[in-house]
Image: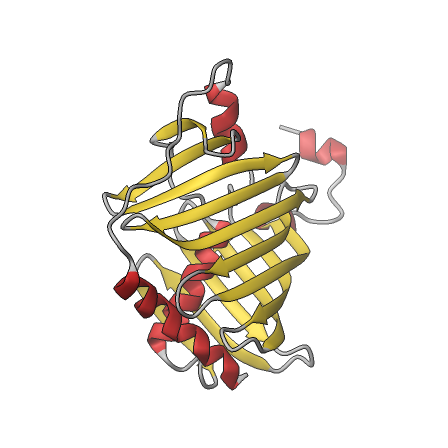
Amino acid sequence: MRRFGILFLFPAAALLLAACSSLPPIRPGEGLSLERTRQECRLPFLREETRLIHSLQAVLPDGSGTSAIGITVADPAAKTLRLTLMTLEGFVLFTARIEGENLEIERAVAPFTNKDFARSLIGDVMFCLFPPGALPETVGLEEGNRPACRYRSDEDTATDVVLAGPAQWEVRLYREGSLTRTLRAAGLNEYDIPKKLELTGHGPFPYRLTLTLLTGTPLRLESRPESLTEEEEDAP
């Protein structure tokens, strides 16, 4: 798992090479339903505290690959996330929790012992799962004539969510006008959680993470007693 450390090189290098350039335009779309587009842009992201288990495949900057299992409990409202990574044999490589800017590493083996690497990894997972903002700054059509929403974190950071097809989304993260990450989400399970996520890191150290959903359930459903009948659920 030492090869995961190569991913740590990407965020710093990407920031160094980011050039101040203009974002791709999003133009008004004739006949486009703005409210429906806003709602569909929100679909690939979590809406409540959820437990997820993914199989994870990583293609690293040197072209090598590695696999792991990821167990995540994420709450988009509270901006908290707890991530555990383990080998396919069940050995725990890394467990950490982030709340706001506070990162606590509970267990780690190298390279996950590096706090900057751990923060970068969790940042990637949060980018995959959490909505980029409450409301988009712009709604319209992107260059490929597909409906899109643009969210702004600050004047240097923008996230475009593109409706790429039925149950398909493309999410692009720009910093200082340069594309740094692309996320492709496809399919939804019964709780509207994407079945497959593919994250690509751009720049001098490109990498790809593919997360395939094994299970994903809102925590509020996990806490209900299994023996509760429908009559008991409806009772005042």
